[in-house]
Length: 127
Image (cartoon, rainbow, N blue to C red; front, top):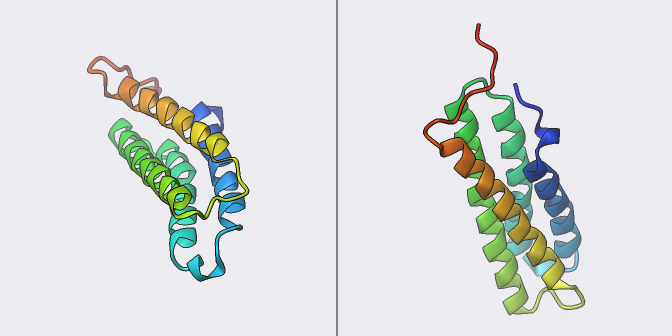
């Protein structure tokens, strides 16, 4: 088992989940079942999948959950950009949120690339 709390990717995406709730709290009430809900679901999915992947025994399962987390992160990035273009992010500093999204994408992407290397050694103790 891996400790998700030691991963920078988890730390960043946990912050993003919190930030997403703050950002979407200002969205119009008629969006509660629309973009607000979609963004919150995607934001929570990212660190949740990292946590679940860390709890998996096999390396391929771990990698698969990280890939799902990365997909949800990209989904959230798009949705945030859309919310800015629609005008829902007024009164916010969208650059701060976007730079956090980009940093998380870089960190999680680097973790994924390192996991996909052909000679990536599995540091799990042998049974």
